[in-house]
Length: 106
Image (tube, one colour):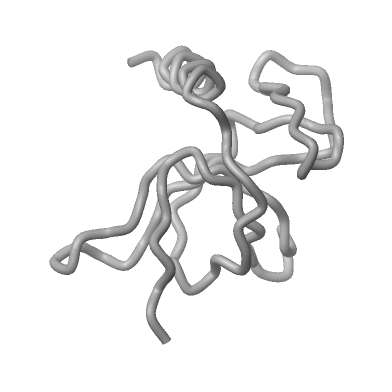
């Protein structure tokens, strides 16, 4: 099975296993090169909001009301990607990158 071509900014349904279940996540990295590990780094989307400063709300028609949780950055195998839901705009990705830079103090 060949891996689908993936791009930063796409939102996919991803199987995170029993504890986190299948849920949407934003791809922060794209398709790995042939000489790289077969992994992507993602930002989880949650509907269980706590109202803290690390929740970034970017409403999209393909997502339930919720937020991308800046404390939940994970690197996962591309085999966990189930299906593409949609993508963020360039401006929305800039908001994500700026918020992640603040979260990571970089």
